[in-house]
Length: 374
Image 1 (cartoon, rainbow, N blue to C red):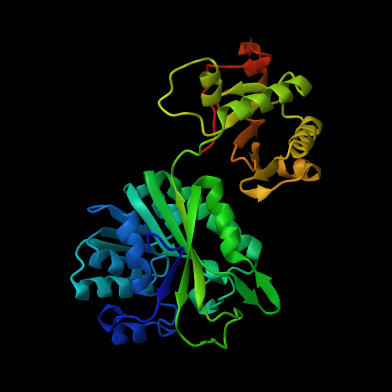
Image 2 (image 1 turned 180 degrees about the vertical axis):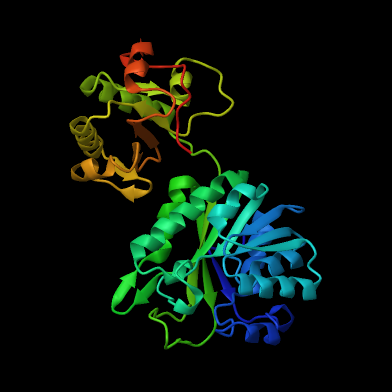
């Protein structure tokens, strides 16, 4: 698998499947139970020996079974208590003493979890509405926007749990619901890239006939899906290209203030880690923000708020729900510039930052506040 962008899954080993009597305890016959063979190569490659992995959508414990077979410790969190009970029974029968299952909401549970080396999961699929399980389940959400918002909150909550350098690997598939194509895998990738460094992908291929489930709206035989591979690590922005951009910006907007780690780098401080973005502090002024967005767009930047695209005409609405926007530009040469434009900082106000700033090469720089976004 290390050298291929695809993984062919041909059959399940009978000894690793969910036991039939446990499957029958599930109201739906555990028909959405994953394959142990799907998870094992990822655990082997991305979770170190003796490491700890987490499945935030544990289901019937398939990922934990794979962790057991690969000799890793695992934690699974499952919202549905009955399903968590099945997963725990599955671990007990397998003698998987290093695997732990807990019932609960992963967003609420995240703060109590220990640091993990790998988050590995199958994403719940939008459109698989099983109302008997309640509206708290992600696949029971009524709208795609609500579904994506909850996915965003999950991976935001998990970021502090993942060790520096650790991986987040999510299995996801694009869907067709009714007559509509839903790019769920690509949208999940976009959400991941907002909080983590999206580093690779694998395509998983299944040799099996089409198996439609008539009671579901989702039309897919799941004959292929994507493994989206992200890592918790700083992104390598181009420091000099960012400096050139800041000089051009300061010529048009002389009162923006650079702060945070990039400001300290500009000042010549020795940093443990080079900046992964540039933090700007600007006045909380709608008209100015619209002009800034237009300026960045003209320079070839993509603008986003919490990972969602943002255009200049949407700034007045977006400003009420966020305190910053992100400008991102990747050039064909590989140069990357990431600039976070903040107009409401919890540590320092813009007027205070402006009064404390000094000029470095025509750019206003403030060194006292840390700044930055996780």
